[in-house]
Image (tube, rainbow, N blue to C red; front, side):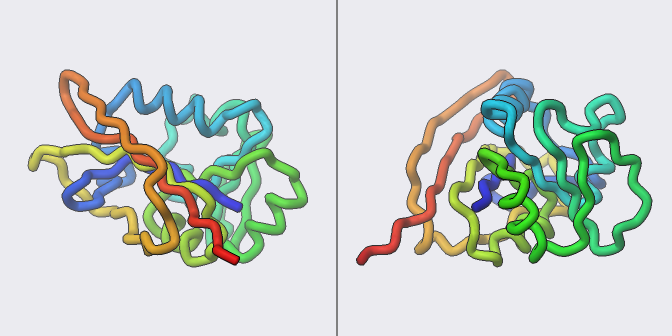
Length: 176
């Protein structure tokens, strides 16, 4: 199973612009690191654009195995603890064989969409930002079918620059 973690604009679902993050939320970055690291036996799963957008000193994301999905499987500067897969259908089996505690999908837009379509998403952690109109977006978090998920948590936050909600959606259990 997979978990998704994303920071997005509430109004537009925007998550990125020109391979960068449109928001800078230091507290959310700390939260992201803590959640995705867990006890240190987790994976983070990302597309090639997300991998390339990481600062050189942050590749791979520390204390987590980094899995990069790329259809092209082209040239990457993969450091230790990083793996390249060329198909989302291989992801579940790869993660199961590696026996990770949790698998965190961290972007970008196309990877979120592909993983949601597998039906193997357990939780979705959303930092939903009440963004002003100055931010531009060219990458978006896809809609997901909320009939399969229930809102478990909704916590308001406010910083000097931004405000929004931390939301956690959990996959609904099938009734017998």
